[in-house]
Length: 306
Image (tube, rainbow, N blue to C red; front, side, top):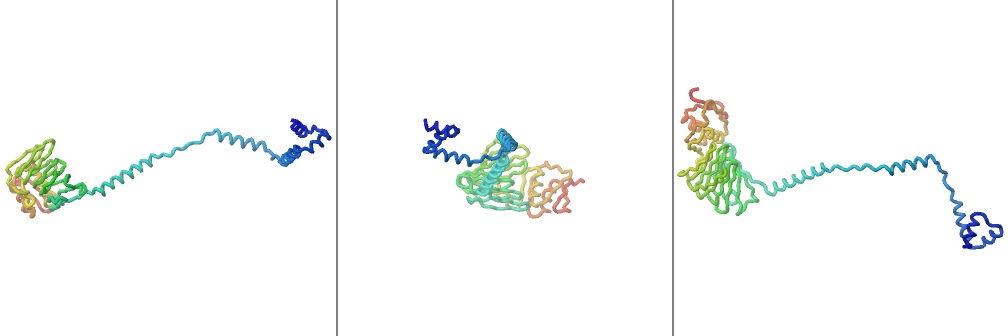
């Protein structure tokens, strides 16, 4: 306590000469005298009050102002990522499950063999597709647009899908024809099940199911052993003329226009698939129709009284 009082008196300058002389002999004086010397060497900076106030104000305003948070818009990134993923998935399935396509162009017939050694003959203007990687003993499936004659090896269900209906077989020979408003299945060997418009029926050799002009009908007693078009002849039994003319166009890669012709009248007969003039005569003469083939790629049909 005494030492603290002496230090305070010394700092305040209240000591007498005799007291100061005595205090200078103590260790406390030496220690605090050194501290006092360091303090005196520290010279305070000159303070510019105007600048200090301005700096203080700016700092306070910055502290009280909330920073503006800009949230990045990731919607375009999500959309882009989704598009990339979709492309990658699509690409994966395209290249990992490539579809095999066989086409018979106009005025042509095309034959192909399926992975199970089944044979298919495509009629003019027809298309057949299937996925080879999916083809095995438990799944044999093709898609047909047009007309084709099938010779199917025995095995698991063989399915032919068309826009009009579905055909299922185990091992047989049959013909499928799918055109606009026209669907026909003809069984030549084995058994064929036809699913069409919610209706299911089984065909045996010599039987045919035809759907035309909104009406389906099963026919029996057909003696043919294979479609006539596979032998370069197109045959028709009571078929509306418009379908016959469509077949002429496919077989010879031509366009047919008509003038004053009843396209719904029925035609029964056939024409060869090699000579256009003979084919036109085979169709027009029995019906009393004339034709103009000045342009061999665009045939005009008209009534013989014009």
